[in-house]
Length: 351
Image (cartoon, rainbow, N blue to C red; front, top):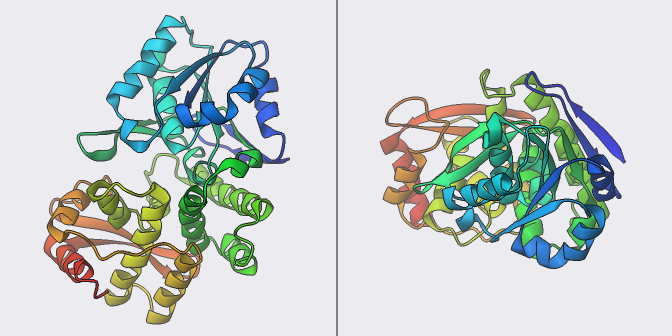
């Protein structure tokens, strides 16, 4: 079992990675007032295990899927927390993928102005990214994660046992964030390239997850609330990826991150942010996950969604986090019309 510490200003957080982490979560909550939030897919697969590990906890099961990451589901969770008469020293345990982690985390932040929180991520994506760092949110009026809070969990328990029941699409989704980290972090990049033929090996995926968590922990420690700008690096590929996700919504978040990195590598190359050789290298890493890269479906709508991105600081500008060189990134703001021009070219499939 690996232990990774996050020493953030608001609250220290400890991440436990390895076989047996789920049981460790049960031991951590033993004798405490606990409220488990999970979704219908996880509950169907692990109902008996949840009862075994958390025998005294109340369990709130909400519908699975990104389309349920909204204020209605959030308030359902809050209603059940209030019905359960949770107190400030009660624990909320988010047991699921990124959607559950975001919603349960936000509910924990809101309830009585903050109750105690642990994260138990069940997907590769959630383990490498969303469960660590304290970002919580729901989508609202077609904008991703626009209502949220920074709220650090006390503990994160990352158990590779959950990988056994993940479909190939969920593995690809997680690889989106793994590959993003590999572009930003040379250590993860070296590990990925050395094991690029082992991406179906669940043990190797766990190694990658631990490497990604170590990198993210350093970034979050240095810039917990995105005040210095360093944490923005974690949005590599996300501007165009989120725009596509909101526009199409048929794939998973991690797949759209992959597509966003692929498409934005061409923008980085043309804007002189990186060399053509390095842009091609980024695309070769993205290709390891075998994503299906589409032509951009609608440039006008894509621009509309990109202009709603939280990273934007100036009106009429689209902020992008782009690959610069090995382990380096650059933030670039493009005028809306210039960004739309790139999308028009991508819309035609001529990247």
